[in-house]
Image (cartoon, rainbow, N blue to C red; front, top):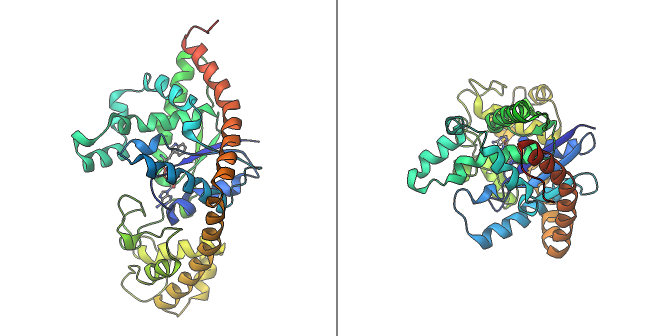
Length: 332
Ligand code: TYM
């Protein structure tokens, strides 16, 4: 079975619909076809400033949501990044083969650091993608299921794997991105020109899975749509309605063409009303299951401890090989 690894940041009280449709939905599907490793990347979550108690809480909420969305610890390895020290250790080694200019070209770094200003930009934000490469390479992942916004980080990961292998001998699998085009970029409901995002979206532009379903329904109904009245899938000229069709199709496993046929001759209002209902029915059971997992934190922590142990069985072996190949003296 091919190996996959992916991660998600515990930087909000809820995942949003983009996280689910762009990434986690594929994680769930890949449990049965791949040897799957998924992590809550708390080391990454401290690169922009944070509150310790909130972070701890969000790490649990993130794990609970992943379970509620369908990750099954019997069929995948679910763990918290900081429980596996090899991530930070390999991150250091990889940072020493990454060019300063190379890291500086990462678009997410440029965006986030420009917004924060130089004095509030941490060195950790700069080295963030190198740690992400370590996450992936430690598990010898063949594929990495992510949304479109992670493509550049995966290019860097591939470059670092190849560079390390060339300089120090074959050590890492060179991973491929696994990006499902249809849902790779869910856009903001109020501004279809940008992606739905916890940092950039306005409150009405983002659907949070754990938010009050009635409020989410309202956000769908007030989503920005396009001029004209016809329901067409045309991402260039009708980005708003196309985004709603993408979400609708993904949540119901229906083809876009099938939806176009069903809404032929009907108006935007009908489509929004139906999608709002679909969304409410989708989030309700997820919210219930998330709450059940959160009501038993001891059990949740146990699941994560078992996950960390399974992850370490792989990560310690890869790190040992990387350390040996890079020239570190083996401890006697
Ligand atoms: P994060 O936590 O920002 O997002 C988690 C996943 O959700 C995807 N995503 C989207 N997909 C479609 N449309 C959107 N609007 C949308 N918004 C977010 C992201 O592409 C991502 O797959 N750097 C990563 C976390 C990470 C990681 C890793 C990922 C750390 N180490 C190793 C893969 C492998 C991030 O910030 O994701």
